[in-house]
Length: 146
Image (cartoon, rainbow, N blue to C red; front, top):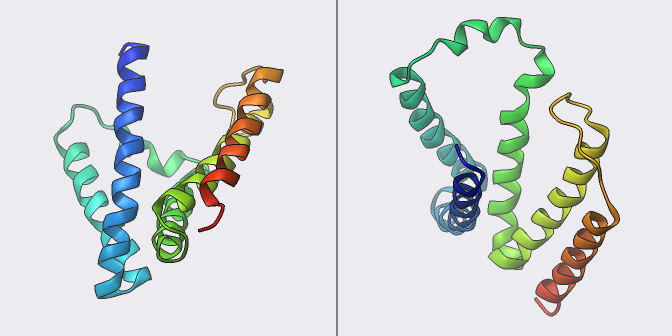
């Protein structure tokens, strides 16, 4: 897959996260915050289950060989979906996502630099740090007065 196509998918995914926050917040008004996060993950799990079922390959047969820490991603994701769903009612979608994205970028730089999960180690340069500083300034502007 080309890098351009990856960036286009990332742009779509970012849009979907914003939509998901709004959809889950609206659902939470009717069923509750935890229930809304549960429904979101259940529907997503069913969709991914269908993809796994019909795709070529047998990657899940190795799941018992995976270190347990690498199975916690769903827990982290569930917390993220819950806290975004909850916070949207207090801060609005833009503020909730701005704070979350800013922290994700900062944490991402640390993960890139130190590579604790042994995925890929990347150099972190002054302009990467400057970019995060600009994002933090943007967070302050987006959340001001909300």
